[in-house]
Length: 177
Image (cartoon, rainbow, N blue to C red; front, side, top):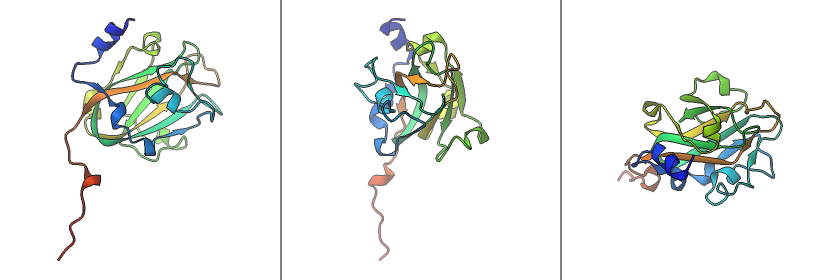
């Protein structure tokens, strides 16, 4: 798929939400120490096909991404190889403190089974109604294409728009007089 085709799958008013990620709170469980989440998520790194996020003990990855402001999530791009790329991806809006022990206790906001087109960069359009007021996103990569022990993610990109709201962190409490 060409870049032009890929871009048309993302609506015009949707932007790459990279600038709205609260990097201080980003977490990834079961990542390889030498192949961490920043390889797939950060600008510049995620465009380098030689860099990957890799799972460590088994094929699963649990990624927590908080945002600096409320966003509407429209679509995601999750790229990887045809063998070790992610297969089943479950997305949870505004669900904090999830671990592998409780991830199956909650219904996902949406689930995607990635095709080879998705792994090459075709966006997965989400159930938009479920991702309207998103403060954080948890991405659970349940398995990979071949059932191997290591899952490799080359790129994760999130597309959507911001919700115009007041930045609560920027407000100061008014003391009672």
